[in-house]
Structures are given as structure tokens and as C-alpha cells.
Image 1 (cartoon, rainbow, N blue to C red):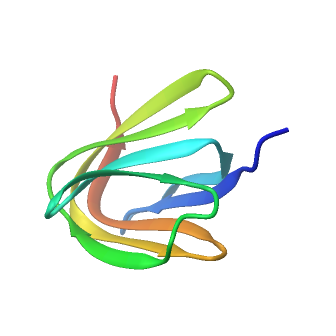
Image 2 (cartoon, rainbow, N blue to C red; image 1 turned 120 degrees about the vertical axis):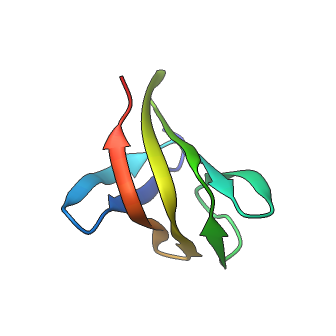
Length: 87
């Protein structure tokens, strides 16, 4: 089994997602980026765009407007100003 990343997506209203995933792609203020397990720690502002969660061959997309992304040795957290599941 490949390493999994713990990912959380939180908006002011509620936690939209929390769990182990394969990869997350997000719209950083300096450009899009992807995070896998073991990624180097960093923090960045987010711009408006999709946050795409990849897990076991399935993808889930959330529309995010602003906020921050924080990658630590323990996982990846997105604190979004506004977020909804796309669809």
C-alpha cells in the first residue's frame, strides 16, 4: 500500500473533508501545486480555484475562494475563506 496523506479542508461554516488520501492539488497564490505524503513543509495563501482530492482512483473537487494551505509532517490542511463541493 502506498503512503497516504492526512488531508483536512475547513471553512468557517464546517469541516468539509478529513481523511487519508493519495494526493491533493490546490490553487496557490503563486501557482497550482500538488501534495503527496512526505512533502516538504510549507505554507501559502490560496487563490480562487479547485482543490482536487485524489484517493484510490477517485477524485472529489471542491471550489475554494481564498484562504491558506499548510503542509506539515503530519499532513495537509486547507483553511478556506469559502469552500463548497463542486458538482
